[in-house]
Structure formats: C-alpha cells, structure tokens
Length: 85
Image (cartoon, rainbow, N blue to C red):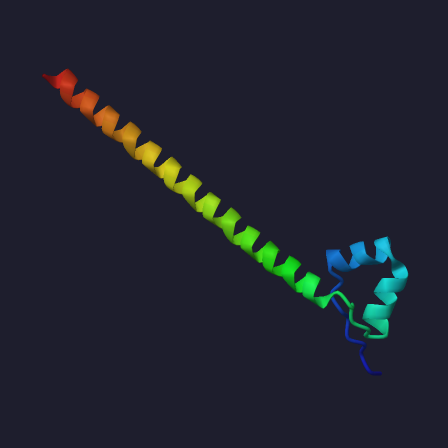
C-alpha cells in the first residue's frame, strides 16, 4: 500500500481559508496565482525589514542590560575601594 505524503498547513493558509475558502481553493488546489504579486512581494519585503528591525531592537536591549550590569559591578567595586580607605 502506497503511503500518502502529508503536507504542513501553515497558519497563514488557515487564515486565507477562513477569509475566503474559494480563494484558498483556487490557489492551493487549482494552482492559480494572485494577480497582486507585486503588492504581495512588497508586503513580504516590508515584513522582512520589520523582522530585522525587531531583531536589532532585541540586540540593543541585550547590550543595554549588559552595560547596566557592568555599571552596577563597577559601582560596587568603587564603593568597596572607598570603604576600605
């Protein structure tokens, strides 16, 4: 018996089906492509830029936390030196 290959269903695909089952069927079953390819590519590019910006903000936040910890350690070391005198 031949085994049927399963396909991953993405959340965007479910969203498309919920929004318009006919559009999902035309695209996924019959293979029709949207007539709005340029707008879709622009949207994908915008999402990529946004994702890179978010990653940059996370990196900056990590650097900020690291610098804050270093500043606190330097303050504690300085206080320790001042109290020994």
